[in-house]
Image 1 (tube, chains in turn purple, blue):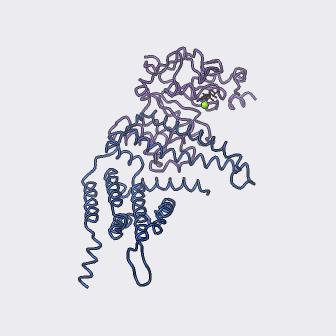
Image 2: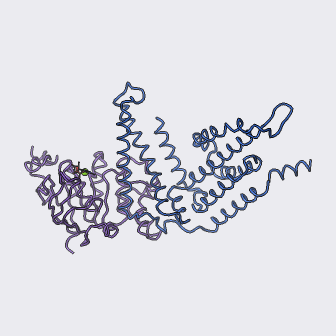
Image 3: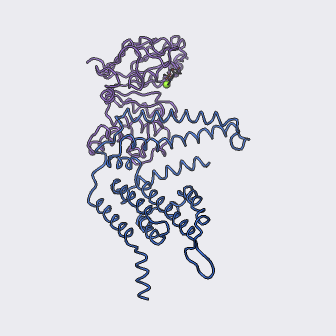
Length: 245
Length: 269
Ligand SMILES: Nc1ncnc2c1ncn2[C@@H]1O[C@H](COP(=O)(O)OP(=O)(O)O)[C@@H](O)[C@H]1O
Ligand SMILES: [Mg+2]
């Protein structure tokens, strides 16, 4: 197995008239950190949903570790995938942080002591040990984000998928999140229009446009091309803007 | 704080109470559920004129409020609304059942008054028992114990999701009202023209969010059933708790303990 996921000739539309993807193909190898960028509404979130089986492609195949994503294979493929929602409020639903982080491992039928270990480990990865017994509704926005990441890490996924992780985070929390993400070694796919965030966390970058993939390559190569980005309604990352001046 | 935020606050507070580390919270949810269930059954089964018998059922909430640090007055505040409802229903009895129950020199108490008091007692006791269950057991644990009793998964999942949906709905209501109030500062309440679109938006948004929460559960391996090993089996102390309460309740249900005590005292005196 060379690829952890691969899309081949994938087409998708929410309704007949406007298609979101036509014949989309790309793949990601184990260990890669991939940023998925593009303007609002190009279909970043949709692509992630196809990957975890919240939506299904009308044409083409999506493979996760060589298993095609279909209704039947969902339980199997979802064990490998950790999907962090854009809005942490919708991801966390249990009464306490601990219970929420334990939810995944418990569902997979792990014995209690293993569950406890996993929860402790996941919380320590995001530096949230002190919050284990806190009620979720008492967390700040940044803490909720970290808790939602922990609730996915406790399932020990091979592949971390995040939708707009930096949205609604203040600079300090954002910086903290970047540090934490960079300390995690698994394969990652991060969708965002925060290009600086992608620059700091990913080594490969896929630029999505209305017609499919507009560019795919080294993050710093792609995100430094002013004309390319502007053609797709994006702007140079701030760090490059300063450099240009 | 507006009324919605207060409701949210109350739900959160209940959640908080349920997850504390107290002896009664640590008891197995199944035995607490079963005790509550039989308590409700016993309370409801009393004849509605048997006030003395009913009063003896106050033993259960009384003892639990004594043994835990839950506050009785706070519980009453939670139960205000349903209690008003109970009172409204039972308040008509005195007008319908006019046959005299007992007569003194000064006034007559008719059957309706007795049955009204009986109904209010039943309402209060059952609500208190449910409050005691919810304030010491998380909704996840309650659903889990239901599934241990072979209640179909679809029902337990439904209960769990409804409970979560209530919170989502309240949050959305609060957010919508705040957004509206901020942009219509001079308006008191909501203009009738806006009601339709506000409610529509609210429904769509809260359904969207509830759906996403459900997806988040599915993505983490949820398939409608509760993991078998997330809760330990009941232990000796759990069985003992169950046994003692059932014994007490049964004794108080079968024997008119208060009347017997009363006769004893009158005989003695
Ligand atoms: N559930 C849905 N039903 C219909 N259209 C949708 C739905 N979700 C998203 N869309 C549309 O699909 C397009 C892509 O959306 P999305 O994947 O959320 O974009 P992005 O995440 O890149 O901002 C948008 O035009 C959006 O309006
Ligand atoms: Mg999106």
